[in-house]
Length: 171
Image 1 (cartoon, rainbow, N blue to C red):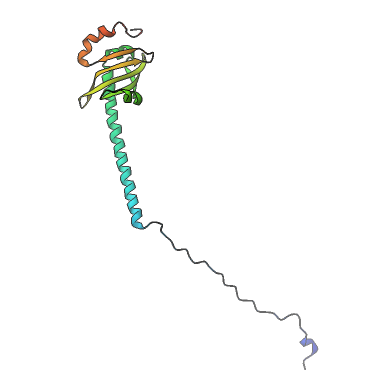
Image 2 (cartoon, helix red, strand yellow):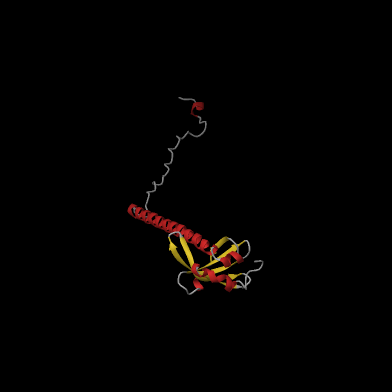
């Protein structure tokens, strides 16, 4: 018979290691497209066309306006009264309010500044050729309020006598 000591337990019987608890892995998310592929391509083509058209219109406007503005400045520099009162034009910018307020057709208003003064020229510009504009009629309004009439190129002979009495200071 076995001895009493051999039957003695030395503690609880060891339990086997439990099997690991399986981890639930979430299913991989499926990629859902919000738009079908053809709709994305169509939107991309439309945006590209809109950008190209917008850029083209900007370039045409920018370069066309720049050429007209330079030609108008040259035409204004040819006016003797502007030479006397303003001097050579250093800067000219379109005056949108003055242009819109003038009822004459082909009339533009420019805010001009020269070394002798500044003012606003409102005049009717006529295209002579692809590189030249001329002033048919208009006026120069100085910043101090004086107004001088601008004449067409063929009327400049008598302009010195009409505006000579009210000439600009220091001239």
